[in-house]
Amino acid sequence: MKFFTTLVRYVESTGLKRSLLTVIAWICIRVFFEGVFESTHQIGYIPFSYKSLVVYFLHFPLFYISLFLILVIITALITGEHIRRVTGACASGLGLIILVPLIDWFAGGGYTITYPSRIGPYLLGALNPFISIIDYGGSPGQRIILSIICICLALYSYVKTKKIGMGILLFLASYFIIVIFGGLPTIVAGNRPETVFVTGGILYSDTQKFAAIFLLLSIISGGCYMLLFDREKFAMVLRSLRPERALFYAGMGFFGLFLSLHQQGISIFSTFPSLFDTIGIIVMLVGLAAGFQCAAAFNDFYDLAEDSVTRSRNPLVRGLDSTYYTWWTGALCVTAMLCSLLLNYIALLIMITYLAIGVLYSMPPIRFKRIPIVATFVLAAAVILSMALGYSLITGSTALNQMPRSILLPTLIGITLGFMAKDIHDSKADRVSGVYTVPALFVVGKGRLNRMPVAVIIGFSYLCYALFIKELLWGALVFSAATIIYTMMVRTAKEWVYFVLLYLFGGYLVIIINRLPTLP
Image (tube, rainbow, N blue to C red):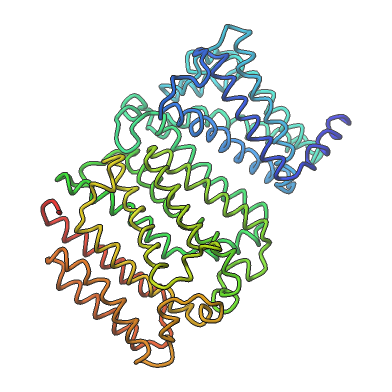
């Protein structure tokens, strides 16, 4: 026990970066070994294709990442140890997973490891050590290593708490969690995997559906992990979120999906009735929201001068450690990329371009943000890409070419004009820092006449759609008038008001389009 205690103290001291690299390394080796030593006996499991990318870089890694995070969280809660130290210990212990395919290869030349077709017999078999789980998609190696992992966690709990009962509790909790993970897709499918995972849809293959489950679980458990790691810092980054903008970009993805179906004469509500179509849409929304938040967080690093005047939401201005915020930005970037890759390869290419635009928008020497009109035109391009991502779920690589010009052009023009509203609040800080947006040039805030040019420009953004779709005229006039009146009458305009008007107009746009034939 003394040796085990010394070993625990040593691995606990591992820094977060090294722990992360260790986890990634173990998972990469395990995924590689499973292809070589288990039943397929193929590096990569299947010939190269999009599906092979999802299997190798999403499905299997996300399974282990989400399980690892949950076990770390449960261990930290039961032992009362700080989650950073628990992470260091568990990162080293995760290496046990690479032994599973080796044991299986020696025991029987490799086994077919799958999710169970029915959850009841699987649970009974997994919880009874005297019943073979090979018929339920398991293997001898899994059973052996599962027991060893749970014993190690129990010993760790005993070392930290000096209580046998806490060790037994962690053993039972970890064993149950791992067993449930092995049958989670079957549980999600309502114990009918054969009728759920092969139905096609937005997440076309069974592998995409499996990966979606563990991707969403990884995101949720990752958020819980960050909360336990440092509550104060996590609260600061949560307060820095721009939910109104994130919702807008995510909503534009959904609008693109709606539009692509409308162009084919199909109703979105009758086309995607299944559970995993809904999950696919959620993955798209999360990916676009994460992509925007990543770009916004990246922008915060270069907006310190301006935000010190007006943007208290920038956590760096409020004293947040830049290293922590870098980790947060990286996590958002990875989330956006993984969500996009899960949807399809084209969505990944669109997201990469979207994030690249965010870099050029914010970072010197280019920093499009400081150039009037060009800045909002770049944002309009990002909005078009958000629409294209949703559109690509139906049309694939031709999404941008098939998008109707009667929507594409007014969106490009309207967003270029309308998004000047977001700069009204920052006009004072922009003038100080040399970022000359249109509101900054017109000295917004010193009188109604000074605000009139900006009010008219922003208001006209709604009328752009009526120029291409005449059925939108009366509604566009109403929203345009409301925007102009609000901008003129209120001395300190609130950004969220403009976004509420934008959301309402978006709903009106969908209703009108839904009544129209195919758009030109």
